[in-house]
Length: 97
Image (tube, rainbow, N blue to C red; front, side, top):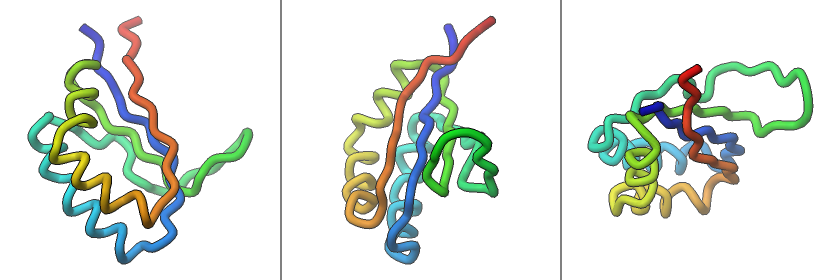
């Protein structure tokens, strides 16, 4: 079964308030075994236009990735994120080659 990923591009409009989201999302991510592969480090956009922050989170499989997103723990964290950032987020299944 292939792994799955959250891929997000974000513009944070209030970095101080965004920290509350980061603290709150830790509960859901721990519960669902999430592993950060990319977490907002420096990026070089070589084609197109992207938001300044990129995040890639790995999950065991697609159903786990979706369950984390739908969980009460993540939805509570998301409520903190919505007023202080603009986010494009997709959940995508990995490729096993």
